[in-house]
Length: 408
Ligand code: ACO
Image (tube, rainbow, N blue to C red; front, top):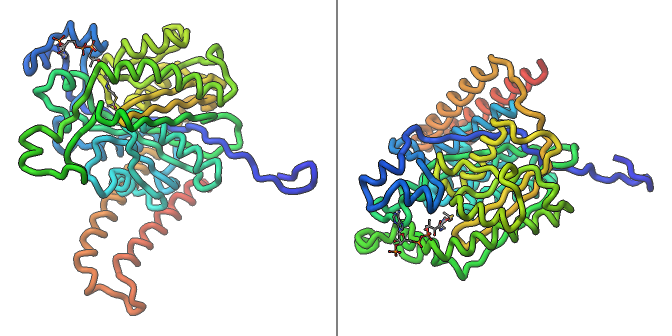
């Protein structure tokens, strides 16, 4: 773009949310179900937290990566963008599949996102907003055009189901958004990221990392389960949610009156009410769905965002705030100028095409795994592994399919 002085100025790139999706396990566990396993009551849980039920991944094949993949596919569907166009996948989680490889890489493989980098982000319940901030930075600096930001958890796998202090609070699920570079002003306007590691012990899984590797003793004494000082976290949360929201708005040159909708981390109804009261925000501007899902940690904000959009709570030019807090201690808030007018109707055949692409991604992955085992004996005359040659050909074929369809 030519500037007044005749020099070329780079085009401003904004990070717009153009796709969104959620994935939740089918199994609903109500407060009454929990009454049967710990000394608690529906009345206690509802009045102290607002939670009525949560979703739990009881099927061992349903994992943080599979939920994340489903949510990401839903976001690609809404945006009508093929996985091959993704440049980066940021998977925020506190219940990753493994210490390594990253859950992000497993999602990248399942999507067949062969042009994307992928990694996990560990900032507990604030992680999704951290991810949005990173995604915006990658887009604004021209390093990426399409960034998938995912929050996914199966906290039920690291919760002590005999500890009533924690097991009643959490649920499983995933949410995802697709950020895309756009010349249209708006999208992610500002982000505030914070950390206070002096509070690390307030919410912690003590063992299983390098500090306290797994031993018979750590397993026997329950050191692999989440431990929490609920009251201290509660005090921190009510203070920081209001503070971070004000800072994010100020950075975006907005005031509290400009806010059309706020999506706070869905941990506890009393925390949300108390912080929103401090900000003077009326109930109709606050989105809450924790009664159905409990605290899904980093997944709670993108799941809530997806439901807010499904309920027509956002329209173009609305100012949206998302704010979270969590273990670390961490906090994060972002102000967003909403620009997407709603769901674009993709042609029906597109959904069939996507399923075929995901099937192909699965085949590609299995083939690569198999061929690595026999790699040494399968080398081309040029000294290149046959698996690599075939993988490149499959990727090129898929890319040409996408380009042909785009031209049509
Ligand atoms: N059922 C019945 N009684 C219970 C239960 C339960 N499930 N859990 C605790 N109690 C008891 C306690 O033992 C205590 O009994 P006592 O008075 O005899 O000692 C009593 O209830 C009151 O306990 P408090 O801790 O004062 O209860 P409080 O009103 O603070 O509510 C809660 C507890 C809900 C945990 C609250 O402190 C809270 O929400 N804290 C924030 C937690 C949070 O949001 N964590 C997630 C952070 S995000 C992340 O990074 C994953």
